[in-house]
Length: 314
Image (tube, rainbow, N blue to C red):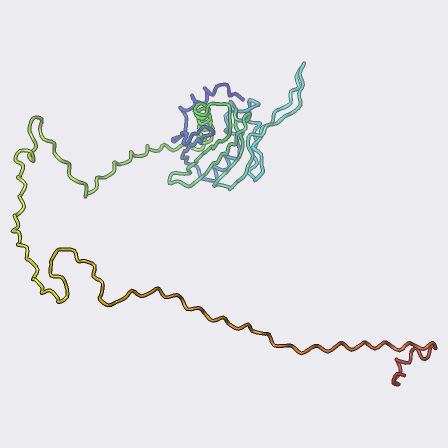
């Protein structure tokens, strides 16, 4: 496979589809997306898609010949390449093969999804998912070609992502060319966001050297109306009660009520002890009757089994 520096892939952007770009790029992966519209029907596009030997760029094969490519459009099917045997004077090799990708979904005339690391990515521990979607368009069929790559790689992602995107654009252009590429006008530029109706009006800045109108004649601050202080009204004098000291404002001496002797501290009344409750005397238990000793069995066999008869025991 011719993947030296991917310069040829980048040069192929001249024939790239209408939309081709790296839509996402991180430290460990990227997404390449390409899109084109052809005048063929979805059935015609599908039949061409599953026959890569008729359109895949031979510059991106291991054998140098796209006729060695095959694709089985079934889950588990292989997008493979045969390495022919060599039988020539002084050199003989056996036949080999390469698995480019493996099919995980084949929906005729609608979608083809394969997993695999293409080109130089095959030597890296990355995973690539190629999804090709077909949809009806008013002028034929739209083909969306997306390659999602993720994982650790020794390449610099900004460099390898552009190179791989160029190869994907080249392959899609090769597929679309015999199907009749439809030239589409570029998408219109997005309209600017409308200004909301309730947006505040912009304040006109005063000319240089002229003070703002609000600074020319500042209004004096209105003084608060003076309130007339009301005279303090003295509370009405109350007649002193008999027996109380008439002097106002002087501290009252502590008066001891006459004839009242201080009450001695009363000791808590001693609680009468409760009489001890004597449990009722229980009647003495009768002495256990002696267990009667069994009558010794007689020595004869008949008398030994006499307790099994209906007769009362002897």
